[in-house]
Image (cartoon, rainbow, N blue to C red; front, side, top):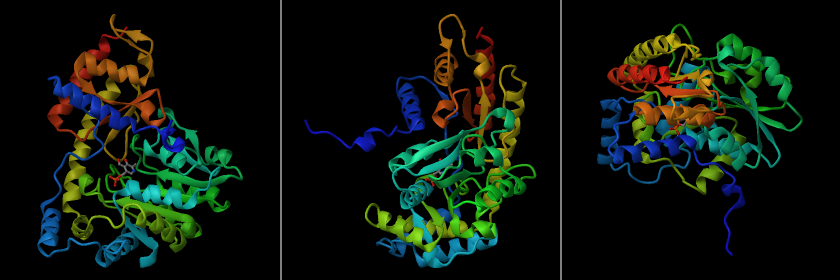
Length: 397
Ligand SMILES: Cc1ncc(COP(=O)(O)O)c(C=O)c1O
């Protein structure tokens, strides 16, 4: 019998995508589900960005662009990296791709060989382990918990480094936890990495969505790590442009050259119209971002205050992104008489069937004690959702 790719058959489909399909199916069946599973801002793309795209169409910027990205966008990205992140790149050190997801995949594929190890922490973004496996490398996961604010220590990092370690994959602000590493915490991790021959892939897609007095710091700006760091970013989250699919990578020209080979033989250039829109976004005043972050901050303050009053939930205060990630394992082995909760999936299934609210089970992010609630939803929905969550949890005994 004909068979399929063994490699692809061993890769898990995104668990968050499966949940979205389940929610859509329940909606089709007429159930009114309040979903807090979204991984994207609920705001519209700002008008000035949409206008730039419309202009690009009217000006016939509708042909293939350079594989690497348009000259305008590459220059804008170089400037952004310089002024906002203290990172210096030349044009052949930048690659524009169809979303930060593709940027990450390109880079993982460009540096890994079979048997290499790639270190990252749990809870992690769902695609990290599967991307590493697609490159036939091995994910090496450092566990972190709510008690440590979902951060790892330099000792934890040092302990898992072996002669096979190829890369450390870092994400701050984090999806799913909202944890933000401070500059001093990043320097401490960097001090471990400086001594080793290890690449650093840093996923900074949530850089702009950051609260309180936290400041984003790019690990690649540490001079000793410059040549070994590949910085990934994109416009999806900061500019509410998830559907436009523009991400970018900045790294050594050798890595970017390999990434271009992969992209050149798979998807080619990112959409010309979206590149024009991304160029406008990155050259904007930042006014829209500030408004969005202020609104996220109001919602975060409400959601976190409420969650932290629920006995049985342990929710550290997220400092970035738009997710609350909290420990719900106190509810395991409890039931409402009909349904029993035993893990993060049954916890989320219980909430969907009991009060029609959808959270994402922590197991999707490598932590089966937790659940993720996105606050990229209207305040009204969040108020109603928290009310339902509280009432449902009191029925678990
Ligand atoms: C941590 C993280 N990295 C990368 C991405 C990919 O973003 P993009 O939409 O640019 O592909 C996401 C999207 O959810 C994310 O949460």
